[in-house]
Length: 113
DNA sequence: CAATTGACCGAGG
DNA sequence: TCCTCGGCCAATT
Image (cartoon, rainbow, N blue to C red; front, side, top):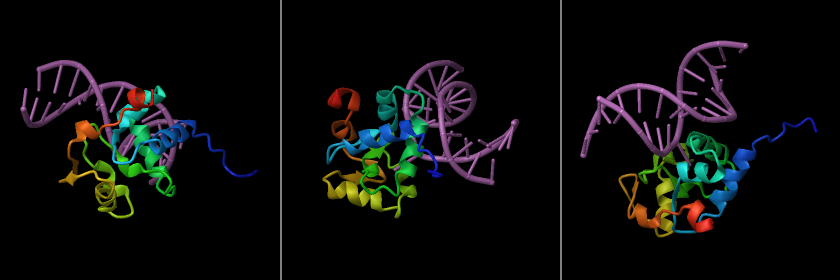
C-alpha cells in the first residue's frame, strides 16, 4: 500500500500497556517507558499518547506524571475530560492532582509482571 | 538537512 | 527542601 508504515512499535507497545491499566488505577510515563525497556524515553510515551488521542480505546486519562499530576489534560478534547473520567472511575482528583496517587499507582513491571 | 520542542525523570547544589 | 540542568527519542518547522 502506498500508505505510510506504522513503524511505531514503541507506540503500539505503549498503547498495549495503557489498555491493560485496570479501572480506577493510574500509572506514570516513566513506569511504562521503563517496562518497555526505554527507561529514559518517558517523553516518547507522552508523544505516543498524543497520537493515541484519536484512539478512544486507549484510556490515556489513566496516565499521569510521576507526581500524579494531570499534566496532559490540556491535550485532551477538553481540559476537564481527563479529570472527569478519572473521577468517573472512582479516582479523586484535586487541583489537577490524583488523590492517594501512591495507592492508586499501577506499575506494569510489578502488577503485570 | 539542522535546530527546536515536547503529556518526562533523575540527579546535583 | 526548592531550584536548575542534562538526557532520551521522535515529530515538527
